[in-house]
Length: 337
Image 1 (tube, rainbow, N blue to C red):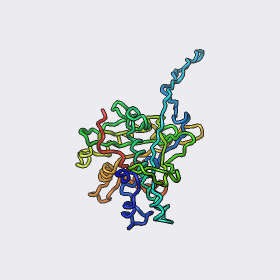
Image 2 (cartoon, helix red, strand yellow; image 1 turned 45 degrees about the vertical axis):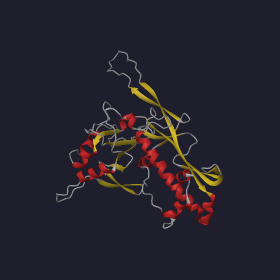
Image 3 (cartoon, rainbow, N blue to C red; image 1 turned 60 degrees about the vertical axis):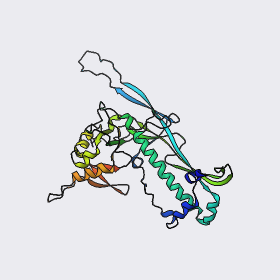
Image 4 (cartoon, one colour; image 1 turned 30 degrees about the horizontal axis):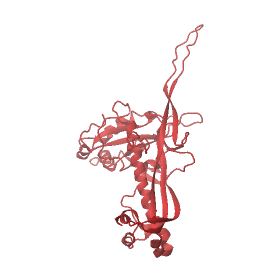
């Protein structure tokens, strides 16, 4: 019977919530997935996989002269395949418990649904950064395994050591840069499906009935042009907190590794789309960056970070690039060599 307390919503769980309206529960861990707020979504072109053709070399050209021929040449390309994966969960609630709440039964189920939304959101965001299909084939390939070597020109060494390291990311979202992949005929985002009345067994093998809901999200990550992203790994968190490592210089180095940062590129039919560039870091680094950007001793109290509005939400920006705070970026990353 011990299994019930771990997998089924109990009356005692509802009693703990009695002092709060069911719709008013505040999730202590609640946060929307910041990456998904900015994501460019593409439908997979190969079922649950997406193939991209990436140019790897330009054709040779030469200066010409009158009465001389033109040398022939061609570009070279490579095909890259990205996979998707799905995360899911089941929410069974004893129908006798729902009967006790009468017309508030829908609120009971919504209370549990919110927790599943949060759990899936956190699992997906962690996978976006760290998932490695070579380690777990059920998942998709995240960003960190793609930018996991200091020999990559777009990986800037943060200079840290030990085990308390984190990363800053600059990601450009767009069809030609980085996209969230969704299989054909699958809706983007978290899906909630009512599975109806289900017969289940308790720990002693005795049957009872629940109302069940299924939650799932199916997605992957595709990077068509790696030059439009940059990572700063090996940032020693304790050094940042103590002030011996500055965030601004690291951001500046990563910024100048980016392709397509020039503002004169415009999106025209048949022309290149520069995409939407966003900076991601965790709360520790954002606080340190904010501290560096404020000249409290100056008479003008100059602030380098400027607030900007994205779809009604105020966020900080650096050089006009919005900054998203995400606790999915850990302070315990392994060193990148």
